[in-house]
Length: 103
View 1 (cartoon, rainbow, N blue to C red):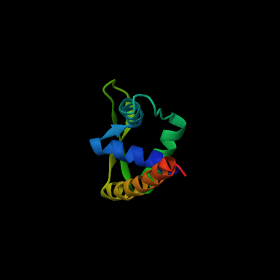
View 2: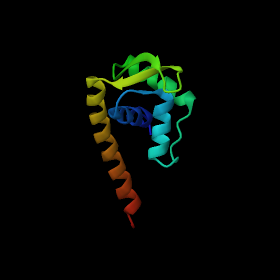
View 3: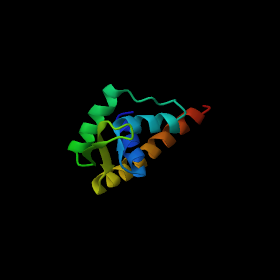
View 4: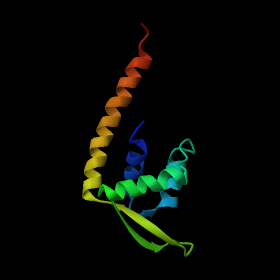
């Protein structure tokens, strides 16, 4: 669904500052590898979220002593996440009603 990746990234960042690889790994871990976010999708999403003011990024060093950009959720991002979460719940409930329909 459009906007789902953005919502997942924003939700993941509610845990704190994370770099891109850690975001992808956490999503994969939480979903038991059902959702595997590819770099080609993740990094453009991070740029888009930063341009929208929903996350802030700053350069830092990983535990492996590598340079990486770490992201954090902004207040505007938290507000957007709340809005998108509500939209997502409404949509999934509507789909569930259709799927449960026995006609």
